[in-house]
Length: 133
Image (cartoon, rainbow, N blue to C red):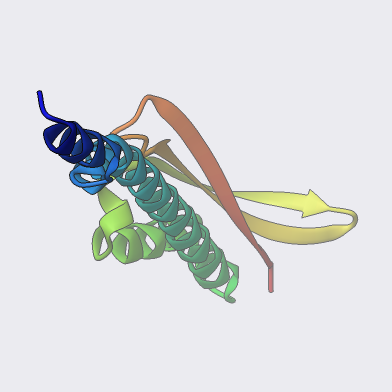
């Protein structure tokens, strides 16, 4: 091997040509995993927020003068059926309760916490309360 070809060989070995491709192949799966985990967290928080809002609205309907607990459950159910959170809901319950000395209407919503898409083994319960009129 001539001295000139050795210099070319060393130059070729010491350059960074092709490193970006290898670095991308190593880093891209990690970035995608972090991105998907963030999206899953956002989905779980969205489902929780929608369930809480629906429970509060159902409790408000049930707390109206002349309303009964079945109307509170029906209102909560109708709100949840029109959202993405409706597929995760397993049970809706309404009952009268007293907090302090104040009569309240409480609506509880049970759902499966979405750990993978909208399916997951972890259950979640949220509740909404309203002053009984």
